[in-house]
Length: 401
Image (tube, rainbow, N blue to C red; front, top):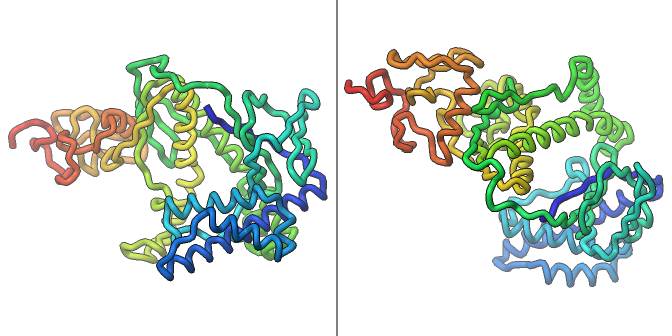
């Protein structure tokens, strides 16, 4: 099984400058290749990876600055562009801006990558045109190296090795018959149908003021300046904590359950600005901005990715279900109304024949688990096109009106 091993690099000033130069060349190749593909599409033609690689080789003879980067990483940039255009469409691919893009480049040939361990905490890797680079040996490689990717984030540089660890996804989970529903929220990052709450502070109250000042400094700094890079570096700690939390939570869930059911959420659309929404654009922009920050802070999408990755090692099945009405539906009787959820944490079923009381997030997680991969409906018939706001005595309760 292929998996990643990520380590922090300790670059010299010369090596850091080379990495930035490599990233700049890759970014220019991406943008030039994208513009070329778009121009071809406007004329009704198609440009593919093979043709662009051929033209890249010819361009290196004419433009000396293209020779600064290894040929393999430029070819991999064009290969990534080709895959992105095929998957999403040429005109939906974004330009790589120096301000928004996190620099990265990949060495695909394992024969050109040599790794040695220097001691208990240090190792080194030899990369084309970079030479030997030291990195912190935070974990064993655990397999044969297939490729190496160098990436920069918040002023730091990392190397990620793609290794074949020899593991195989088991045909049967170690705990067959177990299942759990996971509700992702703002108050708690994840709540399970078993009543477990997973949450942590990614930024402490004392750091909040400092983080706000860093954001102000970042907004006032000039793009490309040294002060801007320093501010971005200081803000990178929160992202690392969120990634660690999602990885640990995902590992805990897949180790205890054969099936993990989550809502099929479109986080990108949910966190879009209110000024860009189709329905009533520009209204309640500040309130929506606060909700967007809360959603992104909890790392909903990152948790889903972590579950997908961790499930490969346990044989756990990840199921996505329709999120409609999971927070308004009583898991005990199926009655649905907005009034069931009295507050953020209190759920009280308004059906006179039920009266179920539960934590609102736990109730939603139970609905997600019971959905079992099918859309949730008030009537219990797995239909989504019928009205769900039914009064007591309707089909939601199974009683005659």
